[in-house]
Image 1 (tube, rainbow, N blue to C red):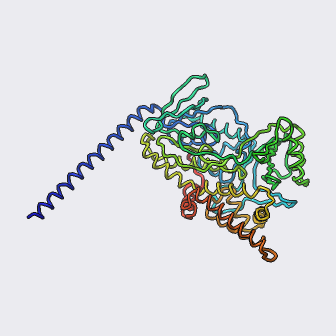
Image 2 (spheres, rainbow, N blue to C red):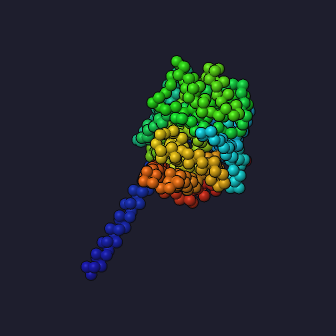
Image 3 (spheres, rainbow, N blue to C red):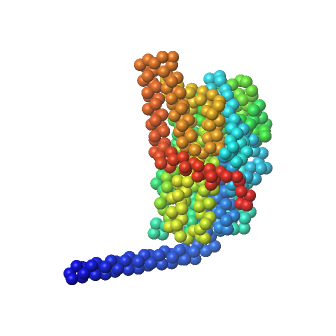
Length: 520
């Protein structure tokens, strides 16, 4: 009898506990629903606020607006940007533009076709072409261009949609309530302080973002500086190549950005930056870099012509690196250089940004609105994983290139530099595989890791030749340790699991690198 009462009381306690739990859950759901409805009313006629109208911001505004979203874009300066970064659109980037319905933004800006990467080191040179790849559903050519012209085309196309409001203004801060971002405070072009509210705010205001710290605790690292100028009324003998020189102490780039303008750019150490005002920079290009540029062709001639003409349109930009750190704050998303930066030597920043825009747009598309910040945050968490094949591959490639392109007196590191050049120029699957990765045609971290491991072992064999001695064995072991340390650190930073699982790359290719749609 006693046991029967015990079971009865246990059952009763279970039923009461379940009822209390169910009531609490229903009350919480009802509260969230009320908050969502209140947010919808408060957001008024806006679905999303985008801070910044660069490549990422303008492309996202267009993509979301085409899905019926009401978009307010706030850009600090709507004049054509003048900068030296973002002048290469890889084949993979062109595919992303096509997927977003923005491929025509590369037209009417005098962009130049690029089909190859030309490498130069110690009197040797080789031209590496973007390979034919049956798995890549687009043209295997990129574009060299003036970044500002393309940005203006993107802005114009976004602003042409009735549900996009493009406004000049300076965003001062995010508006937060109970840990949720509700909108922004900004000064409009008239200098008036204004507040704008929307259930979702996307921050893509570039590498100098003043809102990043409000959304996530992340800091950028300045690696070096890039200095570039334009040589007017000039055309390279090989205008369809990006010309990369393994100079001392740091690399130099020469490429055609319009039909009669050539960009000459060089990486300069952060701690030894020559003064532009007193002529030290002109002297650096003329006496340090020019002798390292081959006399064959007209590359050196064009570089010196630009120096003699006074370094026209000379610009300086910091080469920054910042890993992508997820934000757990509701109501806000970071994108573009405000979110993730890598060394600019591989020229793939726009491609990564456009890939991120495409992923984010597809994730948000099924939502009727963005008022349910909890649901949006869950989708954004998956965004951080889905983007890894493209962003992780590019970030790792940029990191490795930035390390090996530095000239050094260290015997082991010098051997690695030479090995990278010989590996890239050796032809066959080595060259085609690396060029497919460089061009964004094969965004696959495991493939890049494979090539980097091959380079490491090739370098070890080079150091041990013609026969192993204690000194050579020591240097080969050092190279192995340094390479594994470099790979391990980067894989750990990007997320080992997300980087090495091949199915992630397969899924990305299937969902985001299919044939471009035409109904965007």
